[in-house]
Length: 443
Image 1 (cartoon, rainbow, N blue to C red):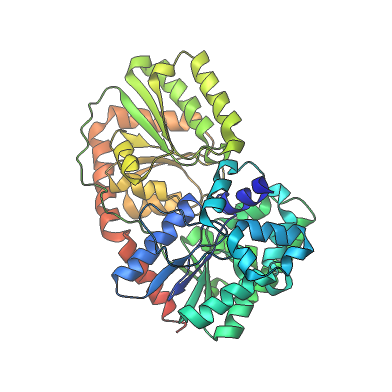
Image 2 (cartoon, rainbow, N blue to C red):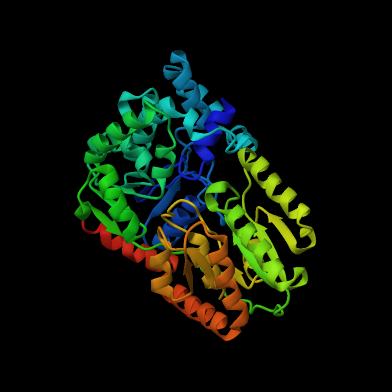
């Protein structure tokens, strides 16, 4: 059960939580956590009482979060209540023992080792809210909100938690909004009959939500049909990042070897294998000593064999000396990584709803080469900081990178344009101001 619940908690769009203004937030992973933590920081910087409330697992953030806020829907309790009826009625004091951070953090070693396909029943139960097996966990959350925090507005971090809205609204009488952050990928991976049942519950429970917030127009339009809600019910607030430290250091690397960077979770969906094929093509055209590939990002247990095969192929090609694996990086290491590459490319196979790595690269003046789908066209149009290419095409990546090598002035222009726009229009403060404008429509 540790593997199952860890997958739900740590999967890219499977784990989540809630935000409020006074606000709440998830213990999801990586992009979702970083985006929501930046939002809460931005709201706090603007003088609002905003807080993060962890769900499932302790919060994953780059900078410290409020450690005094209790954790709800603790992963072990959620799973035991799903599997064993007795745990749906155990005393709350016992639940608190199972919610200890040290115990929950021990789940991280099982991270992403179980597919979303195995989590259908648990997904349905959480979506059902007060009618699910985790009713006791919802009661705890609602009581804390009502008696201890008393928010003016609550925002769920993604639609996997629409089942919480009804009880929160009944008890607190406040608006409940919901962010949309890529959860369709998780839901689409469920096996039948769970996927069909989950979609039915999701669309029904979405009626309890006062309004949705999407990170880009592409995802707003897509999710309107997915959730069967009107386009008018979904507001678009572009992503923002905490810019502290980004763009502070001037890049100080020579033109050779030309370093191609990849910064994202290492998995097939993010398309690392496509970039590796392009890397091989570049070595054939330029020479082994002229090009280098640097890779950084979280690697879950489930995807170790995938990455192992990539490393074996690189060895077969004789390119090990031109390949560098940084592993998972913290904030400081991430900024140092970005300043060690000439361009960044994460050629996702799926249509990305966020893509924070684009903003992070551009914040440091690093241009990007991205597939022409999902959120990327909107990013490139807004920032003028990169090149769009055909999806799933190593040759297209190769051609774009060769252009940036042959035209260093153009490459610097893209990086400078992107850096200027990101620092002025894509900060956590700008995102918070946009989100506040949405909140004011409901308060």
